[in-house]
Image (cartoon, rainbow, N blue to C red; front, top):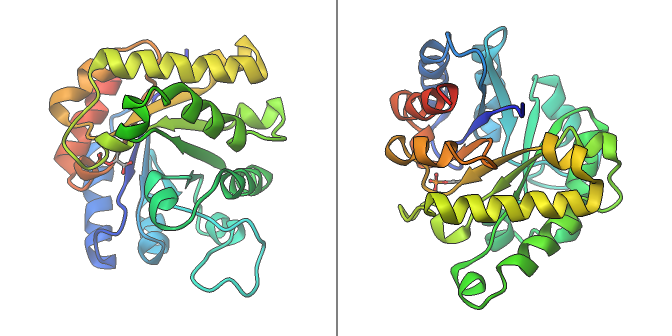
Length: 253
Ligand code: PEP
């Protein structure tokens, strides 16, 4: 049985005090959640304060990005040691907004995945196609390139510690969600590529989240699909009640 993971990506939302309040609301809401791994990813600025809120609870901390160097002259970046010190367990890597606006490439994704794993943290590796790529018949080649690139020179043992988030770019923040069938078909393809690289045991063990306008009213259908093992949630993660409704749908599966 694969681990269900519902992760909230807060992006550039919430001040530090708002982040603390949101984290407190989520901690209270999910205290009886047992099977589903609940993860929240605040801004870097709020992360240390949010870490204090989630410490000792069943809510895990993620950061939204990482640099692959240990330290030094990299203005605006943070290292895995910094993430580790405050208790982060997951790092979101290769989000489509990073790829689209901040020059993330297959190579930098791979460097970040390696660094994250070497520090004992778990990467949530984001992949996904644009509408143009999907309509142009490039869905599979785009995803294959992203998966092969992210896992370049990563051992089986390390691959088992990773999580994949399949996020069609056209569904992120748009309110346009993939149908249950579209999502399932693509997630199954993603798992088949992992199988090509690492074999069936690994591909059956890795959690693959769906992300892209997952909301309380569509979560149950998506999470019922056999290759969807949770969600990476943007907008609906910014309120305890909507985030909790999605977690409850995962827990009920
Ligand atoms: C995301 O940013 O990863 C995401 C899925 O956002 P939203 O849920 O708002 O579409």
